[in-house]
Length: 526
Image (cartoon, rainbow, N blue to C red; front, side):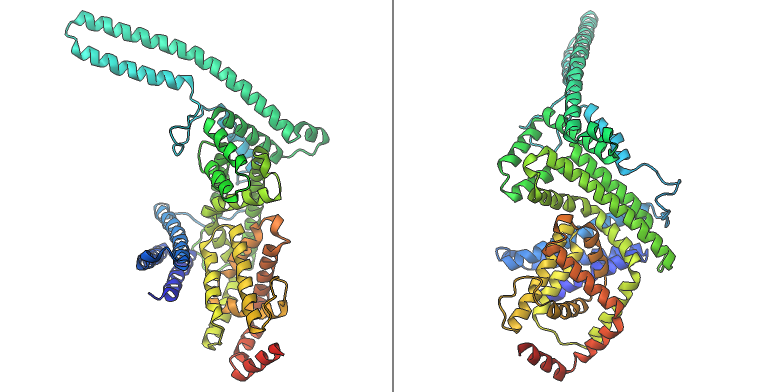
């Protein structure tokens, strides 16, 4: 099987499906996603016996990522078929018709319920790791057992008097159990109240709540951090599995993969306060972003400005929400309270949070950046028509660039952008016999033309939205590093292509001249 052609076919189906969704043609989008999944299935079956080879394993990973994204969109489309009356509604966030409560106010209303509700063990936790159950639950189970036992005895008796006595005995025992359960439940609730108050006090000191109130610098996020941190402390005290996994995290603090695995475990178990908050902020963002669905194919500048304002408000809320989660997680697990630990936590949060929200962000960004996307498509058509020659090394880099659409974590996407630039620098180093070019900052004058050529060759007009997505959500700690440099360079090149689209087309036409190409190669060698 020609992997390159098959991969391009999958990417084309995926992009065509996104375009169909953008045009509000859900039926065609559904067909394209299904067609892409069919092609992925054929590719996965073709070389299943060669999975021990690294390059084959990487292919399958890429295809599985595309399959995940396609499946998520298919489920969303199926849901939309039931609710097909959704109309475009993008009122200002400050409008009185919208919920004026901030994310933190909404979360603060829900989080206290975690402290007061009866704790339970998540279904995915092994049975040998017990949780904390309310005495009421034990009595209810015992009452059910007693009832079944007495019912079996009643069916075997023929004497009405003996049956009546046995029923009275059952009622007496159930009444005793209920009275005992009520007393034990009261004692249990008192102990839980004491624990909750102690956890609230610890959280108050942890985030200097009283001091901030006295100085007049308190804000809603501080109260949310306090409430969430206290809920987590109480949860860990009442659930032995949470304590055990926290100990495993601390004991294996040098193993980054192990840390990520445990953090994923906590954040995906619905009974944990961290998982609860993550789910709430996902729902909040998805609800706001879903308002941008529309049957319109074009927008006026004023509408785009309004959408851009809408996007930036949601993005700011998202960053603040994720910062609250990051801060609380660093407070719970002290060994992660450093720069390395913060990056690990952010990476895990990005993978989980944006797995469901990225498609909505990209859809909105494509509407906002529609003009840029049209100019990019025009330049790409010109490039393709002029058949500009390119190095064969570009093919592998183009495949890497297309992986951006299958990824949902801004952190992981930044790493991929760095890899792409390194590949371009490596190819240029070989051509110029300079094997010491390791830094991304070396040879920017030579790198930018190569990057322009790569982007035009990729036939990926959605790149504006993908790079803008990364730029808006990249971790601040990496903004000044190689990852931030890579994002800035891509953004600069994309801006250059849009502003100078005509000159870029002319330049690509000139580059088809073999004489010009050979002379430029000679100059670079000299």
